[in-house]
Image (cartoon, rainbow, N blue to C red; front, side, top):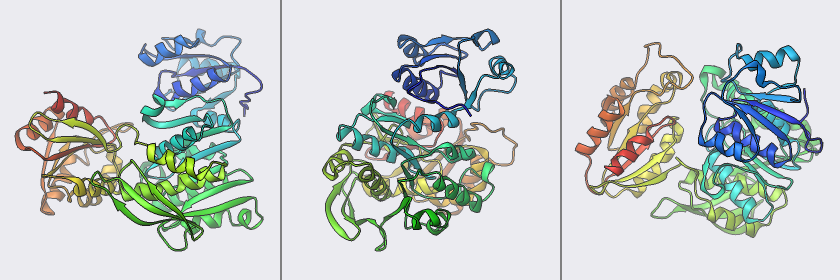
Length: 467
């Protein structure tokens, strides 16, 4: 496989450079002094920014875009096998890297790399690491799965040995990552269209754990069912001292422990930090929920492992606000309803979000939910209903298909039926327009509305606030 080496500048070409993730990775190479070109199907603000930074962008994907001076090519899974550029690259035997392979190659150029994995909580925890590193003044490079105000987007290009990124388990893409600090937040049932069952998911995270570099640390939630499975995968390396195994959580046996977690009126936690049984004072967060108190422990452990100061860590965590669409306050409607948007699209995430919402609501809690993918909806129908049933009212939009095709075997109405049986006021309305109008005609002053899902349901809340 081609090796991306910052000490040897090269010409990289990105097929699909206009995507939010690909454009950010291209920017990292520009910052490292590489020549970068790329293609996409249409012009956008993203491509304009790239052009301003010296990137040659083609708005067609034809064979002639592949010039003789290109050293390697990066492409995403969205690029079809018959793509003209891709076919030309293969015919010329130009080194070809998937996005995951390329991100793994990038990581190898940073001494202090941190990869944040887990079924839930990756973006918020990566945001915590980003704030800690920036507060410590180490000028990190950051790649995050959401838009973070503190860095003006999803990418920050630094000039140091510090790098932090999310590590997504879907299709095992994180197997390409070899981090100095590998974090595993949790292991849960998701992406069953790829993994099939929870045992395969646990095995995948265990394999990811083995990718941690020598001298590195594997930082794992000590309170979950699969901690021992992950530990066993690296037991020989723990015993011979080539990696550290660090646990975090609320249990007495955890190396990093949150004690006496308490939430303020906005759902933001404060807790007493203990490291290896020794009190390290109080940690106060600006993100919401007890789950984020636990997740912040992993960021603390990783930050200490890469040599950062505890006081810089404490202050960085206090400054960290969630990325967009993570319990994000959007505004108040004309009739006094507070609107919050959240990316939660798995029953575990929904439960955590609604626990915070119920603790802070003044009136009734409304949820406008858009399920994400047919396979996930079908696999978790009962769990979705149970998680959503703690709301006073639930309205459901049609399923967001994403990468899938509707086979007619599941709909949002199936969740609504289960919610009604659980005694919850629930309605399947379908279109966003119907959802918006129903909410507008039924919620009242002091109620709290959460638009929820990984699709585009947030547009409903935006419209309600603007009208």
